[in-house]
Length: 243
Image 1 (cartoon, one colour):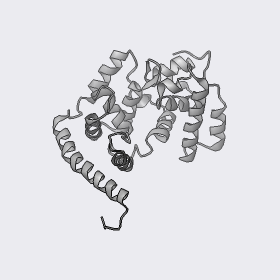
Image 2 (image 1 turned 45 degrees about the horizontal axis):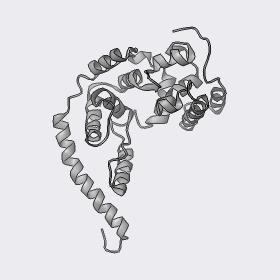
Image 3 (image 1 turned 120 degrees about the vertical axis):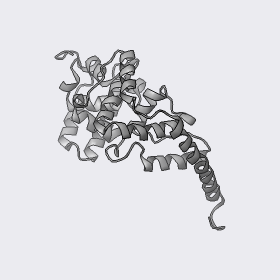
């Protein structure tokens, strides 16, 4: 970096270089020491069994729900190989500026790996393992299965896991029989389950649903009319076809 660069910028660059110098060999070590990812399906099965929820198959994930999740959580899901390089770079810059391992830029694959391999934690060194495991998982199973596995185990409210259980609890209907607004609400709840649980704070859940619908609209997944109609739906339903 040239001598005329501002001192804070030079410090940031040096800190970032130091992080990268430590990160690269740590990633190599993590690749050698972490599981291969070949047992990811077994781990998802064990996790769903322990939670008493349904392990979804690929064809059991409604396309609209998958779109809602991608729009709000991981827009590059279908093009990356487990890691969002842009999000990761942004997180590294933040960490360098704040001298911490604070942000992760987690993809859906990383979140799945965190849940079934790391006990739900991606703090500190676990963050590096999470990155490596996400890359390995993507070499073993495809995107549709990753989405199904993720939605099978993701927290969807206070002490509630998996979108199938949430559909029954919130809408009294099987996952395959929901509306656009209901799928958007499920996709939104996963961001902060205790905050957006509609049985706890329906207004917060509705606001989060609106955010998901706006993201889907911006990505061209739905029309303005569809977004408006879905946003006017009741947050919870008292009756339904049953699960």
